[in-house]
Image (tube, rainbow, N blue to C red; front, side):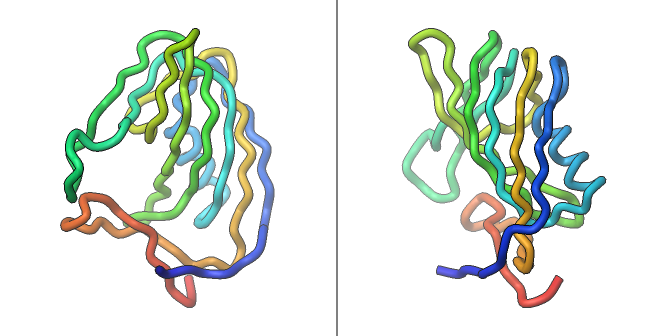
Length: 148
């Protein structure tokens, strides 16, 4: 286990509108506001999105099992923002539902908002972390340092 201790810095309340792309808009905001360490929650709806809903098999590195949302689904999610190779990377896990067919997964790729998504971002002050791809694990885990 590795960890870092910090405090809550700036707080952002964000409204993303119909037709916007969830991940793209959050990355743009992180660049504009220099948000390097943060966690967020969101709620709203998407018209389409891609979710990784677990690995195809129980092995590392995993091969992603994709679920494509191609009709309006309500979403509720939690995620974080850390930089990888000088770019903000959004890691968002969400539940998406329409009727009685919910799905949970990691949102990746393009996503299109239906009506609105509201996001509440808590910047993590004093935490110096970034992501670096680990070939053996097949993803980019958070790594910590003592300075930016």
